[in-house]
Image (cartoon, rainbow, N blue to C red; front, side, top):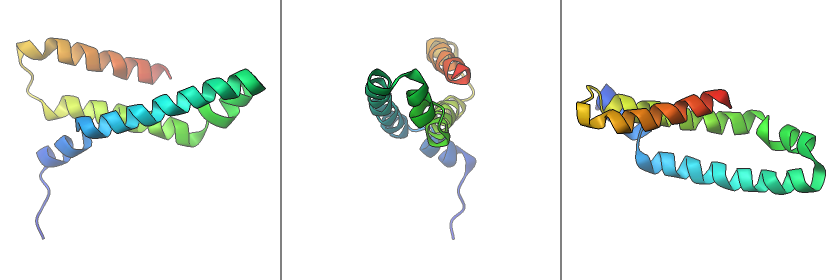
Length: 97
């Protein structure tokens, strides 16, 4: 049985494909949450969607994906500073969620 190297695991978990899929799912759910909030109020949207365990799990998976994308490119070069700043900013936003 072949062993998985840490670099391979980082690249798979930090892949842009996985990130795009997670972001599309979250965008659709946030759109759905907007309609729930309009029809049933902010409290209902929070209880049904935004504060649910599965929604927070999706946000956590996206944060892990971004973290692994950063770690997969370690050691960082000076030209990667914009990439690092953007991804660290998104991680900070997700931490605030």
